[in-house]
Length: 319
Image (tube, rainbow, N blue to C red; front, side):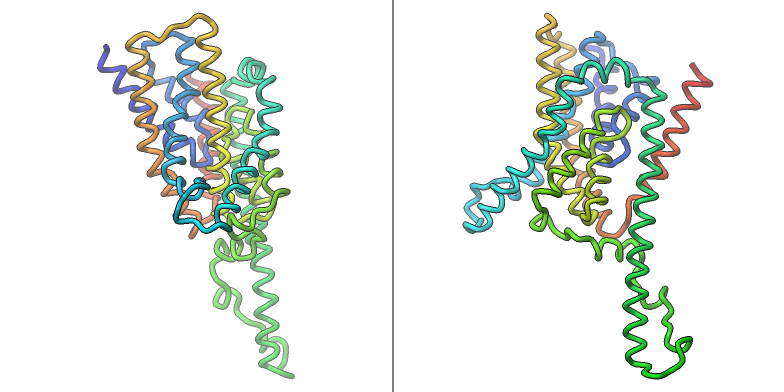
């Protein structure tokens, strides 16, 4: 067993654990990492490894949200158990659109849309979308805050001249990012309706295009459908469990069905990658859930744009 391959497997696990949950595209980062860090494995194993390593990341969701997703928890009331069963049903139904479209088109997508330039374009387009959507939400929230502030000051001012009654919005209104979330229609996972859940699931179909980011697609869908950032991120984590387990199972089946057998070094690489992805995912998920309570997604949008430009520049100039 080559120690360098073990070290490289650790690097892939770190990248997978971070980028699978942040809306920055794990595919784009894996593509770049592959240009500098190569594993001594077969092509078939490599294609399988990039998908199956997600199982480690998925296990982190199951651990962190075990109570929320466990309908048999003895600490839950009967109402809480009913809600958990309802949530699980919403998760399964929301995953159906991606499964119906994704399973038949999996091989075609990999063959025709796996180029670095498609990935870079998706990175940039979705980065722009994050910025545009967040700006629009903040403008709307600021307008509502201004209207409410004018009403309050006007009622106190009585017949005072309007220019005297007009408030200073920047002093009266909370920060724009917090305002946008405060005015979201869906403030908690308990308020997430069937229509919104299915709508987010439909947005998940877009993640079939490499570089879009599965979490990026569903978070954008959640924001557009009126969810707060925290709800959009949390439901994204839930949706990942059946989708990524299914994708990993399908890829592993194809690997074995093609007559491949895991060599000892390949098995070690796969296990190391999954274990590291699990450990790093625990930290990444906690970070994102804390981040979205105080910040918007625009930093991720700018990061995606910069990364997309870097990918294009690298493959145009260095290849």
